[in-house]
Amino acid sequence: MIQGPFSQDDAKEPRVLGDPRALAGAAQADAEAEATRRTAGAAESSRANRRWWDRNADDYQLEHGDFLGDARFVWGPEGLDEAEAGLLGPVAGLKDKHVLEIGAGAAQCSRWLAAQGARPVALDLSFRQLQHARRIDQDQDGETATGPVPLVQADAGALPFADASFDLVCSAYGALPFIADTARVQREVRRVLRPGGRWVFSVTHPVRWAFPDEPGPEGLTAVASYFDRTPYVEQDDRGLAVYVEHHRTLGDRVREIAAAGLRLVDLVEPEWPRWNDQDWGGWSPLRGRLLPGTAIFVCAAE
Image 1 (cartoon, rainbow, N blue to C red):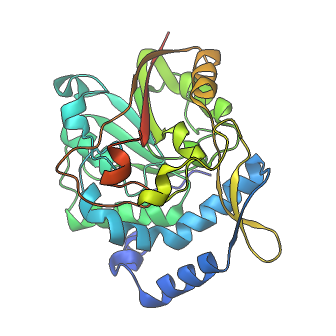
Image 2: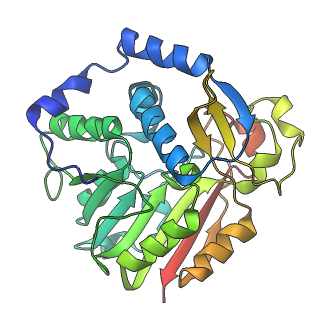
């Protein structure tokens, strides 16, 4: 589904972040969910994750908004910044480039791209996340290089764009971990990329799936098989999924990239920097000094 321009009324609703009633409802629903490992198909994953992010977007932006900024391109919890990393290419070369951000959330990365003169489009499955994107745009009075970033609500497995529409496609922890058929996403990205275009995406480092999602010492001992691709599912008392994440090994990712007609240019595993002393879920300085937490795949369209 394509979401057209947001009205003023759409954007006003989430201005008060962390509404106690909304957060209480989300916390209760999440607390009652049962965690398990089981199969979960494309439709179930998409439905569950859209609802989860709609329900938790306020809490997420309230908790992580300062770290993410309003117009900053951060690749993951380590804090690797695109302004320094240059994984999309030289900053000066971004001007006038057509860029698609997948799983954009509140479009912080797209807003940074616009400030460099690029022409980004921010896509996300969650309407509530996109409402936060419009809220930030209005708080800034649309003061970006191209005005408010265009927003699209859609599934990454069915991108609503013509072939060869973009020079660059990017995703910072967006969409891919929550999609059952990521090979299809790779094919869709290749379809909308122009020849010679670049596709860069970051995800939880696959090795983390063998360890508990804990920031302390208990998160340093492997307890599961790295090779077990069974999805992680949180489900309600009826057995219906309310949250789903899908695991791929490094080899799986590389094969999906190659099968889509893309070339892997680089695989970046950011080290935990000394300045970053915060915990973010299972990411922490303790674990980050010992285990990779993020994998960033830099790909080119042949």
